[in-house]
Length: 108
Image (cartoon, rainbow, N blue to C red; front, side, top):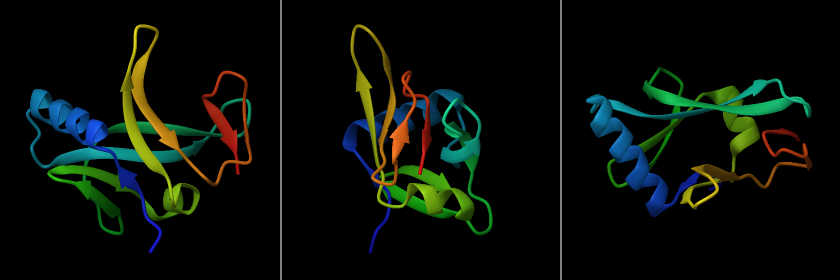
């Protein structure tokens, strides 16, 4: 069954964010919203589970996705990468047909 995969590094980062915010009932909400130069972009924040959400886990770490966003995110792998140039969550989304040059927006 297709879903959203959460890497160990992403799970570790989510758990760290939740702990530092002292919000043990929260997870990382990943949404797809309109915007950017290609039409769609990701939005992420810490949030609680809502009715209708799809929840994907790795250990205690939770990714929360609303039904509409799941249509765009199904099959995505969520990773966390740290380097000298940039750090952050990276989404490997197989549904993307085209990305903008800066990599912050996409088209499906």
